[in-house]
Length: 201
Image 1 (tube, one colour):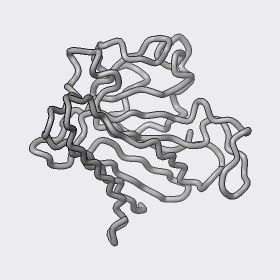
Image 2 (image 1 turned 120 degrees about the horizontal axis):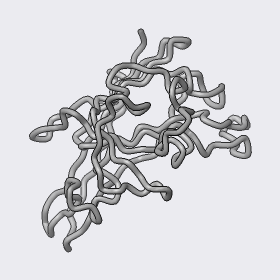
Image 3 (image 1 turned 60 degrees about the horizontal axis):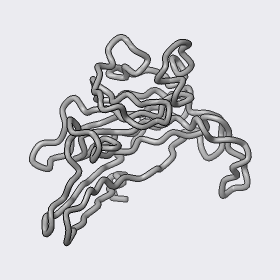
């Protein structure tokens, strides 16, 4: 964490054989506090005009589809709970909510950070931006959390009690030829950076 309230995550690897590498993290956020309700009132913006649909096993099909006109359109701010239970949407049914990879509209060029997301909670005033060198971001809204999971403070979590914004290359990329490659050659440097920038408003 920097003095400017930026949490920077950097990964670096140099393989000695041809290797698929796609590192990320599964950090949960709830701006109300640990085990303090759901994240359904959080407002999310994703700088992504496309997403990668999944099959019933939550594995990408290889398609890259526009989000416009669907519950997956977060190109402008929407509360997470606003459309998460949209009836008849197969993608939401498969994930029991949002658990999908989104494609950055303006991805990183020349290793410079590009904005992937913004998250805001009006109740607390907490605000966060996600910037990354990665081309995709997985949005997961805690669809498999239950009160059987207890946090560090001894409080049980609840369904949709946290969300994750995981920067990455698209899942299953080695098996999807139209996805950006995750193959790193021997001696080649794999390096990726993501920043979570915190503030209030």
